[in-house]
Length: 452
Image (tube, rainbow, N blue to C red; front, side, top):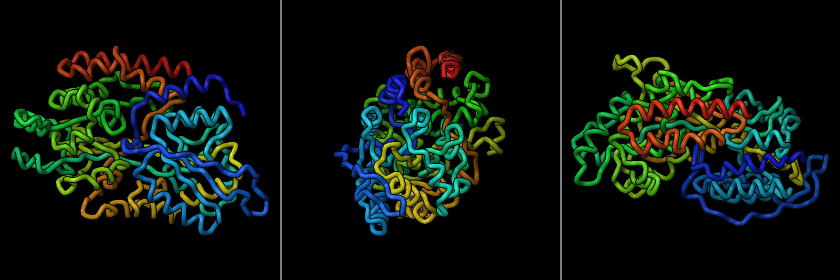
């Protein structure tokens, strides 16, 4: 193993990262990690272990994934012990396992940390396994996710899922204050107008039109930057245009919305989801990985999903090409370089990722698929709650992959601090602060890339 001392320092930055993207669920819990056998894999196709340990961080996905895993157990004879570990402890334990050589057999990888694990030989090289597997053709998966988990031409994970962003509103609040419901045709200007009207009308009731957790960039302000034509990180991962006029236009819209939204101190203390479900907020944006939380909520009948609003860049009142965008990200199923039975670990990954089980994952409402075209069932997985907005954006809009570099957490965390966007988040009344924050962000990102 080529575990460099630098890894611990860099990966430690991930510990401070707030819940982001693809399953960063606040409802996660910690369970005890099981032990796999120490025997090695045989060459005749049989397995030399009786159990595989799997770590994930989203309790909302546990039941569905365990059901899929149990079906593999029926055919393989190998039991699968899936442990849910909350986001922060997930990376702490994984880093400790990497240092001590006792990692789970199979686990999730995320865009924030994948490069460090891949570049230090901590993940199983899957190339030969994929080449011999008739069920896995990487051309069938979302290209951005495939590329994310490839380093120097070696594939270290198979896409588990992908996600998109939608607007969620509480129709009871709109009814209370006589405001027209959001639709798939809404722009961010429409969101601003409705949020302003509800915040003003609901002042005595402590009700706000909008709430956004600015630390959750994937389901929030990233979408406005890209919708207005900017880029947090360029496609070749070598630069940023976050200080461009286009990016600043997107962040100016974000600033105006924040002016009539719940203040960030309250958001940090309570969370946008809790504020929404307590009836204090009329609208939020959220990712497809969090649908189950709202589906199971007490007032779920009042909750409606519509497509993420578009950025009316040219002001013509119509959604033109490139104006409706949604970030997307995807987890990858990876295996430890030290797993006792590499073939068994890979076969479980293949089982999770083959077409039939990607469809089943969508049917069970676990999350959307990483396999292109396997998502249709997701839109009807939640009974009367229509979540088709998450799929329609792929037809009506443009997806951009969640921006990343080799050391994403280095600059992503710095953007949230004083001297950058934190100042603008806390005082959204000042347009100059937001513009200056964009300039500071560009310097931070460029310096971080130069150091990679």
